[in-house]
Length: 546
Image (cartoon, rainbow, N blue to C red):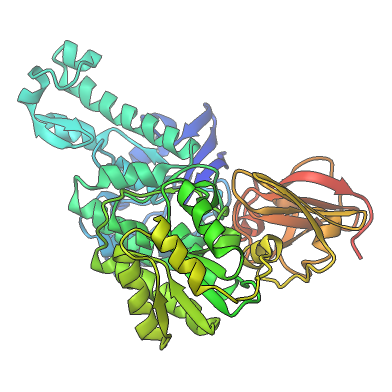
């Protein structure tokens, strides 16, 4: 019997524990799988080509009588929670990125999420990063041993002639003893240790972005995965408290970036004002603590809706500048915007201006941001004033924006309403609420009722039980009839709002109690898993919220 419990997620990648007759195995890992799964040595006809049609696969595919359970893209998988899933021939998919992703998504969506995934004969130090990122957990030494037989020296950067063993490129025990087999195996083990570290830090994408640049196929797989918008978005945490590295144009397609931009357009409710000022971003985040934005704030004096134009996020309204990834992204600043950045940013800004028309739009920008704003004005049919000059933060430019806003009425900026609209997709009436706001801490009350606090690490609001009354019907988790005495495990979940992603604030409701906490897995995993923590509970009360 096996069992698999996911302990940590970072997109499709996981750190998990596979329970085996020999004891627990921490994944992702490389092992002697014939020792772990003795049944493998006696299986026949298990290497049916992945592209084989359904009749051929049904005739020749061998599921196996024990663990791991072999699956094929053309067949309905016969897999249960806790199984180890084997995809025979997966090493052949690496050379066809489009099929790799199509087959992966098809199989992942058909198989319970609490299963371990084994890619036989596939893992090399140069590709294991993309295998793990796409959701594989278990590997063997077959591929590196084959490279050893071919006299090839394996590194994360690729495979090289054996002579590299003698050139001091590596000082592992295998290299010190001129043992190519030992070196190649150690190189794979070391790369997997790095992968586990970056998953634990929730920065595997940054690591994969760096590694993938050495191999065209890995870059292509990454890009095809990003095009699987729904698949990737629901597996990506809604917020992290760590840096998002936007070091290449591929950052525009990252699930976190797309989600932020989509919610700005589809959920976010701006302040009630008919004058908008477009501002440049800053290296320091959140923007409002930077010197330039403090100067902007003094010149604007609250007389306009403030919108920050930036790459890769497109547009960041002032009220949600602390929400991940707006306060967490890092991008190389060169002053040059390529065509993809301009088109993406212009599209987001044009969409926002079309949804929220303003009497006046003032672009206090320069360079690429100004070019993107002008493109957006053309797309949305908006007349735009420009005040930024060559240096938007200079005294002359600040005086210009101040004069341009002369006579305009003050805008009521509402961090609570703006954040709740982006976070929960609901319009909350915040009249009568009092806000104690001493960054990075925020507390919201109405009378004596404490409603919300802010998570300084992610910028998301944490509702109290009273606060949840203002957020009806969404982000709920329904549990079975049991007393809540700690975190909620997946087997106890009856239903979960499909909108829920890992990191979301949720309200847990059951016959015996309600609780508030943070989702530890997305909704589809809560409903389909038989193991693992579904909700990290913060507070419990016995009576239901009316």
